[in-house]
Image (cartoon, rainbow, N blue to C red; front, side):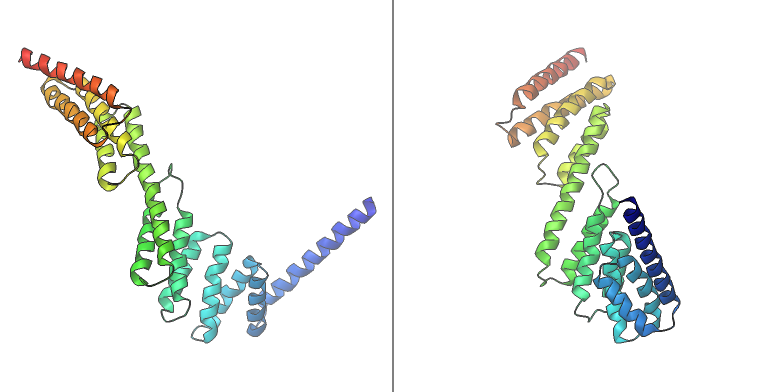
Length: 269
């Protein structure tokens, strides 16, 4: 059994080495017809790494010919299939610009934006790529308003905006936990402003009221009256939006404490 196993490993290794040797000869070959056929074959067989190397050589050779368009399109897809979404997005975009009248131009424009969507990181990381993806998808919608892909593009935009919404909420909560109440208030208010229909509205408005109260308590005397008044108003604002909220009891208690503080400040003036 051991001899058979060793023989099989040696045989497999020889096949791999032979294959590599043939491929290296192909890369150095001057027969571009063979290179083109093999590049397409590698692509169809999902050997994208080898296909890319050949496409890389063939692009300059076939520039200005009918084959150039096909090579450019497959080149972008080969990077996509290798999960290199940054380069895939770049080459899809380049294809759409270079071949605007191609039957594949719309697909390439969408795929360029889609690659940015796929490359968007988790909410704990910087969201620059996410914002760029939203811009690219919106650009696709503007450029191809009648496309069947518009509905999908809108879905992706909604998903990405939801990610930005969560990121904004997480940042505001981080400031609150750090007891930087001024920054927390600003970020919670910006969240509501930037995402008017946010699913975090109730929680955000709850923490705005709590943050104003804690911020007022930590303030110098000359600022306390204004900030306790903001607390009082923030609770009223919350109740207007969410009269049945489970937070009402706690916030009314905070509001009563803010009222007492305001009365004490008035008496001591």
